[in-house]
Length: 388
Image 1 (cartoon, rainbow, N blue to C red):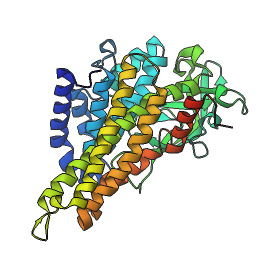
Image 2 (spheres, one colour):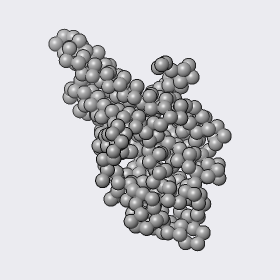
Image 3 (cartoon, one colour):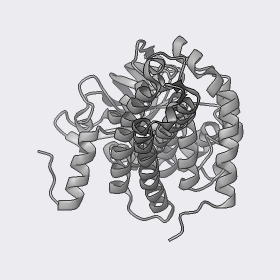
């Protein structure tokens, strides 16, 4: 068993860190306050390869393995989780769905532009009434000659107001058809009847565009069905398989949050003096820093194990659930401890600890809540489904 990184992986991680320390870290507080990152950073990130990782070169990507992808997500999470979300949704959830489930024409049309961030994508699964219960969504797609008319509403959609294409999941079967009646569609966001409204006032990930989507008889050709004719009724399977890799990205981003909490806590504790010496010398401060460091290592190893399984083409769903569950909860713990190390200074956004906590909190909710991850892990271990 070799847990060391290759020279190429080490070089990419360092290049990513250097880039983000220059282009993101100095501006993340400003972006957070104004509730929008500067979109000029997107093509710069694409130039470094963030959006093209794991997308084959034949489709305009840079290739690469999933361990390298996890390293990229970690560095993005350490710098600003809002940036991590832009990448992992557009090139991850949307790009990977097209790569593994799309027709050759769909791959040729969309992947090169997603891999270079010429176009951004959003993942339209969650609805006001269906979060964890994605098999019972109510958006409808009705066949009309050679087209489909899509009507429905989506909620909490990352990149929603920035995206050029939305991967929309809608029911093509009967209302009671459950997961078997769901189909995925590639919908251009400039199509008539498509509207995106940005959600403001979020607790965290404030620099990231999160939106409600409204579709009112949006007409798309039958060729917009992800996977063509064979994709009809397979949308739920597409969503679930894609979310497994999405959980890997979220978990890796959470490792970045934990690592960021460790670094800022150590730096602050070394500089801050009380009772005539740096607080880093006090054992109870060291205790908190030790807990953060332990969580960073444990979460990172769970992420790397999952990424390695993906690279070796072995089943990884349960490993992704374990990594996502542990890393997201660890991110909340680490950020809370980082605020405690900083004392009153941690309660304002002059230091990154408060932002780390606000960003970390949603990680236990989206792409499968912590409770859903426990159900998935328990079902895998027992062989018995806990779902009714």
